[in-house]
Image (cartoon, rainbow, N blue to C red; front, top):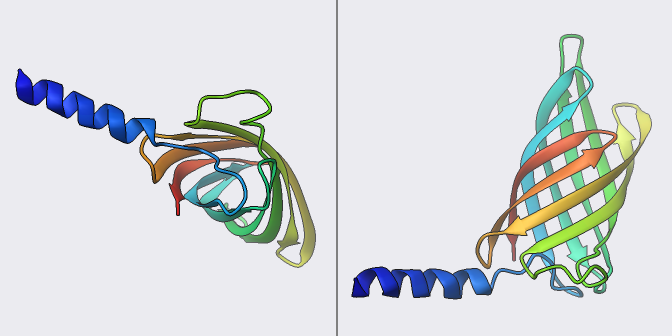
Length: 140
């Protein structure tokens, strides 16, 4: 019984330090799967916090479908609503914009994302908009 209580106490301490958004200087990396139209593929992105509200970063997606492969390399800006919505520290909701190059064309995407952190460093994310993606987040 003592071991069970000790384990639960340690787990509660670890989870209590999980923060989805820390503001200025915060760094998050994400990797996952993208879904768009009739194609799917890997995605990766990085966000750097400029303030409690704004982050900038970049990323890349590749969509595989029957006809061809469609890469999208982009810069991104996100607006983190954790503080404004008084969310628990483990949760962050963030709308944003991606701007970049999609194949040989200009690419623009908008999204609404959410992150939930299970531990201080590891969490999950989901983003929906022009395309959808989900996967894991890592906090530096």
